Amino acid sequence: MCGRFACAVDPEVVCCACRYRGHDGAVQQPKWRDNPRVPHYYPSANVAPTNYSPVLVSRKNSKLAADDEGEPETSGNERVVIPMRFGLIPSWHRGEESGMHLSTTNCRWEGILEKKTFTTPLKKGRRCVVLCEGYYDWKKLEKSKTKQPYIIYTAKEKPFLQSENKDELLTKSAGKVSLLKLAAIFDVWRPSEGEPDVYGFSIITVAAAKSLIWIHDRMPAILLSEEEVSQWLDFEKVPAEDALNVIHPVEDLKWHPVTRAMGNAGYKNPDASKPIPLEEAEDKVKPLPKGQMTMASFLRAPGTKRSSTGADGQSSPLKLAKRE
Image (cartoon, rainbow, N blue to C red; front, top):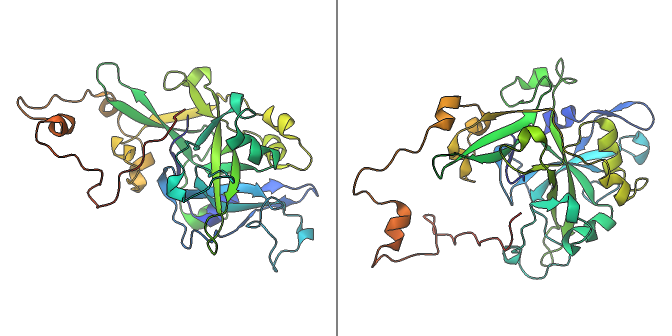
């Protein structure tokens, strides 16, 4: 499962970390393409559903990736990086964006060819790669109802980039930085006339590797090699069925516990992905003083009015129709 991840690095660094060798043998660096729906992109250590985050895609795969005047098609650069919405909205959806109640942040590898929501973009070749420093998952503590979040990331040399010097990353360390590359599909939804199209993605999940089964029985589909990334993105030469065959559970990962505050989707502090002491992660929730009510007990108490709006006056998020 992958409902949150971290990508707290600048666009320049993201593109630099995605350098690859093109079909002509030359080293290429994908260009960043702005998304009209995201006038100002902000990196985040806690990317949640509906947030926008960088995605690697073939430049032939969307209008957003179209060539600009500064880079002719003969340049050899076959990829671009575009911020897309976490959670695709099917192209066939009718109504408002807020009326889309399907859970589409993840799609199961085993059933991707069975659901219209995912088969439609897959048949159109809309395959992409989500770029992140790591993804979050929660472990239920044995003696309490509390869940402890962990971030899981690459075992390579430089898994976390946000604390590094940007200039150094773009020069000396450019070839060493490592981002997780997650196989995903995207779709394009056209809202009301005059509004920009919504590009959204769904991360593919597989059965968890043996080393990760302790935290969850699912994990995102991670593409480890350049060959796997190339096959996944090359929708013109690699059929969907063949591309799906490059996906498999991955063992070569590391993890550490992080603050429980990041469980709130609105928590965007840079320390969301930083490690906390293992002793703190394993602490039981201390019991409340005698007579003190929990929020749940308070809401159930007679005479308590329940509201559908949050503290900011906005409507509470709709419950997803289906969770993985």
